[in-house]
Length: 300
Ligand SMILES: *[C@@H]1O[C@H](CO)[C@@H](O)[C@H](O)[C@H]1NC(C)=O
Ligand SMILES: *[C@@H]1O[C@H](CO)[C@@H](O)[C@H](O)[C@H]1NC(C)=O
Ligand SMILES: *[C@@H]1O[C@H](CO)[C@@H](O)[C@H](O)[C@H]1NC(C)=O
Ligand SMILES: *[C@@H]1O[C@H](CO)[C@@H](O)[C@H](O)[C@H]1NC(C)=O
Ligand SMILES: *[C@@H]1O[C@H](CO)[C@@H](O)[C@H](O)[C@H]1NC(C)=O
Ligand SMILES: *[C@@H]1O[C@H](CO)[C@@H](O)[C@H](O)[C@H]1NC(C)=O
Ligand SMILES: *[C@@H]1O[C@H](CO)[C@@H](O)[C@H](O)[C@H]1NC(C)=O
Image (cartoon, rainbow, N blue to C red; front, side, top):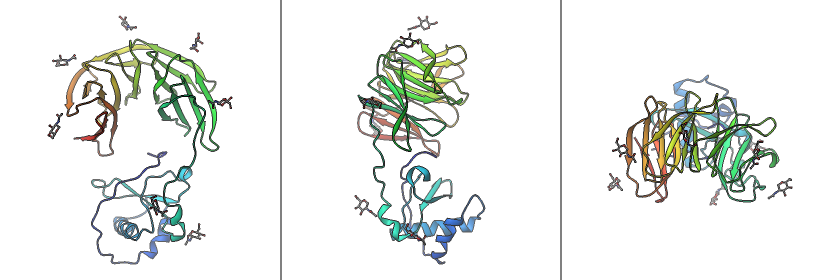
């Protein structure tokens, strides 16, 4: 979340304000940590709602370095809204309060299908041109081009030690040394494109493939710890749930939740009529899935 620009959804009945919102301007500017109490939080929240109503501020999740917008993160009522974040209340800044295109990164010669944010904040991109590029987001230049594939780079994941893992059309997974751009390890056991990668809570790498299986890898020696088989189509998406379970979305229209102790299926979620292309775990632990059929579903 720290490095992502995006919007949070708004809800809410606005209560009558019983205090002066003007004091907030200074408050937001001065706020520098967790040093405020519940009353302040509630007042901040009400003011935030008021300024949103008056359109003198915007609400978003923003990284201030990337988006150059002063903001504060205000934890509030974690059941209904985990974080709200409020742009500086300043009418003169209204004109730049929309998110505008900041930069276009151009150096790939084919489609870009995978992205990952490295631990140092750099952006990595995987492309149909068979390369991975690491971008300098200060000036939009390419820091490094990683080339050892002979096919599109479908998936990327950042390991717990900071290394970059990539999965490709050529069925292999590569672990890259980002110091010099060389390949540290090539993992081969899939018999179809590696379309999805995820890092488990214990640090192991999981990969989903066009061969309909998911493999859990031992990154010490590059061997397969476990092969999970129950999908009847390519595994296009993976996500790790808050309890550590692995969720997988497949071309077979289902989502499966796996028991990583014994490799069995804990649960099969079916409500799609087409491939499940993307998965993400929400802050409240629910699973979101996106599909070929144009819908996004939220699973309890
Ligand atoms: C509001 O923004 C303008 C333009 O950035 C700045 O000059 C001004 O000092 C700001 N006002 C306050 C009260 O922060
Ligand atoms: C933000 O963008 C919308 C849609 O382009 C536009 O109608 C609105 O006026 C913009 N607001 C500001 C503050 O620039
Ligand atoms: C990418 O950048 C390199 C180095 O600047 C340049 O030689 C190459 O032509 C660029 N390729 C594309 C597709 O833009
Ligand atoms: C990948 O790297 C290996 C080992 O350095 C090399 O033998 C191989 O030719 C490279 N493959 C491609 C497609 O660049
Ligand atoms: C994957 O590993 C298993 C067990 O070592 C082996 O039997 C199988 O042939 C391998 N498959 C591929 C496609 O490399
Ligand atoms: C998935 O598991 C279920 C329950 O064990 C089994 O009935 C089904 O045949 C399996 N499907 C595939 C494609 O392996
Ligand atoms: C998905 O769930 C809705 C609501 O429960 C149901 O009406 C619909 O038939 C289901 N669709 C499929 C394809 O299972």
